[in-house]
Image (tube, rainbow, N blue to C red; front, side, top):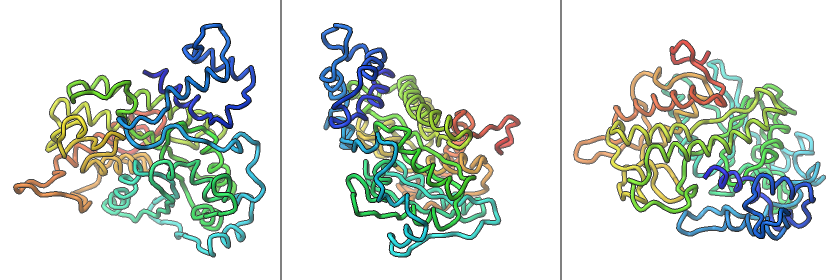
Length: 393
């Protein structure tokens, strides 16, 4: 299962255009890594065999959700530079003018808050919405500017093209983030992942940010286990054991750990993981032993229960789990356990049924525990808590 998902990352990122003239050396590397792609077993991987193998792995399957996993990527991403008219090459004043003179800025916080810019899609939305409510309960306001979209339109690659007015947006720049990054002060940037991500989709953002803010740090969510990772959709929740979900989580760790490690080779100590995948794996393990108060099911697609960890085939979170993602964001960014926040938080999404509040305060406390456990347990989060006081060392 791991090799299949790694193959998705490497081979599916190559579009028919980019695949047209791979070198013999590149084909040899692919053959060594994916020997099953050699259909006729002659020891030589042809372009046709590599393309067929990619298509077999990434063809859109309506049973497994609607987000495209196979898509064209402009060959310009393989060049050493972007087109000369890209917004990123202009002066701060010119970039600001491209966005109608609009710049978002925040004064330097006196309370330790980070000024954050971010991209993302529907998997990041729950955390982006919950984070400001969590920080407010922790005693400070969260400065946040995002440029998001649904599915692929929220990916780091898509937003870079859109902001710069290049490739599919040629001559139509929309530098919502670039204008503010170049003309105001920022401390961190966040992204949501997407299928077939490459380090270069993030490297361009990092280079631009560090040009203006050398001390910025960067955070990539690793999402969470999805049914799309499985060869076949399970027939019931009984087939989705805690062990299987943990294995799916390890695949996510490998995929996005590979991206983060590659980026940290160029920018040591700058890029971290938001371990939402680990948090959902831990939540699933607790559900299996009956330790998620009020949660009725594991996956709504399989069990039909509204109060489940996941609600659809693509893997969007079930009700209440926006809090868990928000707590993971908070714990990673600020190196503090959400358990240290006193009292309840006014998320405004509780639902009452027969006098029962959901999520309950008890479930909310479990979410806080899980988030901190996930964050300090993942070495790529950058947060450690050796003395167990709930504050990063």
